[in-house]
Structure formats: C-alpha cells, structure tokens
Image 1 (spheres, rainbow, N blue to C red):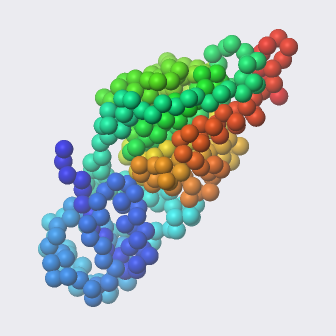
Image 2 (image 1 turned 180 degrees about the vertical axis):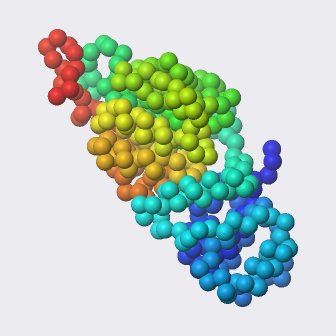
Image 3 (image 1 turned 135 degrees about the vertical axis):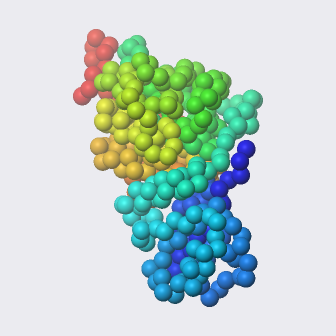
Length: 346
C-alpha cells in the first residue's frame, strides 16, 4: 500500500498554522512540517521533502527569502492558499475545509486510509441485549413502509460503531436506515453481511430500484449518487457523488431531507474529515434531528466534531446511547393510529 501523503505547512501566525494543520490532519493526511516564523528555521528544514507544501501568508515580505529558496530548491508542488481560514465555528468553515481538501486531492491524491472490516468488527462482539420496544410500537400497522428514515454517516472507525448501534435496536423499530459509509466499493457487500450479523436488520446495498423498508439498512452505492421517491424507492441520479469521497454523506443527507422532511434524521459516526457538516444544518432547519457520536467513543472524531461545530447537533452519545435516544424519539413522534389500524400523519 502506498505511503500516506506528507504535507508541509507554512503560515505566518500560530493560529493560522494550527487551523491549517488541524484541517489537513482531520482529512487523514500526515503533517510533517509546520512553521509560523521565518526566523525560527532548522538548517535542514527545507530538505525534508514533503509531498506538498501548503503556504498561507498575509505578510509575504517577511518570508520572501524563504519563499525564493523554497520555489528554487523544492521538488514538491506548492499550494498557495487564497485567504485566512475562518474559525471552526464559522458558518463558512465546512465549505472552506472542503475546498482545501479538493485541492489536496488534486495535488497528492486521497489520504491512504483503508479499513479492514474483519478487525474493525470482531467476529464475536460483546453480547448486547436489544432495547425493549415501547408499548406504542405494538399497535403499528403491518405495512413495510417506515415511519421514519434515518441517514447514518460514517467513515474511519464507522463500521464497528454502526454495528454496535444496530445491535442495540429492537426488531420492532419502525425505521429504515440509509448508510453512507466511506469505503471501497468492493467491500460493500461484505459490509452489508457484517452489519446484519447478530441483529434483526436486513442489510443490503441500496442500488437503483431498491426500497427503504422498516427494519432495513440500505448501504449507499459508491459508484453513483442516489435520490428517493416519496414511496422510498432508490433512484440513480445518473452521475457520480460530488466531492472527494464516495458516497457523499452531505448529498445523502440532503437528498433524504428533501424527500422525507421532518420524517427523517441523521447520525454522524466515527470518521475523518467533515463530510456531512455542510448539509446537516439544512436538515436541522427543516425540523429534523441531527445527532453525532461523542468523541470519547470514536476511533476518529473529526467527522462528528465537524458537525457539532456547526451548532446543528442536538444530541451526542456513544452508539448504545444513540440507539436508546432513537427508540425514545420514535416513540414520542409516532403518527397516531386510526381505528382501522393505519398510522396517519396528524
């Protein structure tokens, strides 16, 4: 497997250097050099040869000698950023970070991150007793149509967290899940088999023509973007997912929210980067809940942290706590059941 791209950063303030380094590392790249003062350089600093230099300066005159030497001697490409990074809590930060990621991918490719499903999701996980379903679930209609549709967004460390979440849920939960997991397309079918092991869910890849049903988990296909009909049928958009990673969690959230409105929600699990943080605030504004796995229980917390930084996340917890919160949320928001046994929107 090729080595992970190594990034060197030059910025003229400590804050800017920290923001750039955090953004680069949060996407999965290795930051090997960071300097914020042209007078504090080791003799061999420019000879350590990262794969890319990221340069963001507002006082270029202080750095002119170093820049001249850098441009003359380095064999690596130099990316000059187009302005100071916004604060992490700023509304435009997710899009700024996404633009930076797009440039990094153009120069050095995607970070070299690969998950081995058999090690992330042990064959014999700790036994978990599903949550006892509330009495309100007993009177639901027998239709396969879900009461709610929830997007699960996950990346590095996500499979183990999502499986733990699913293993805690009761079979009677009237919800369909759509999982957008950053993964090589060749592993999707294997992931589907792993996720439904030890629980009652039906997991499969949500290819064109599949249908969201209660008690099911559809995995977003990697090769093309999908949308949904009002009846929950998956439809190919006839084009790739946008952005550097597939499937796009942002697009999965946006497409689900546009179709199902307040009958949907999203949970951001463990992962690198900030996928999901652009579309999640829009889902929250439509009145649908957005939750995230807490940092302590994540293998990597960049992704749920990025969603939290937008202010749209209304609940954080470990996978079991998220499962309990979902059961309670569904119980409280169930549509009333009429005398003919059909649940209808109030």
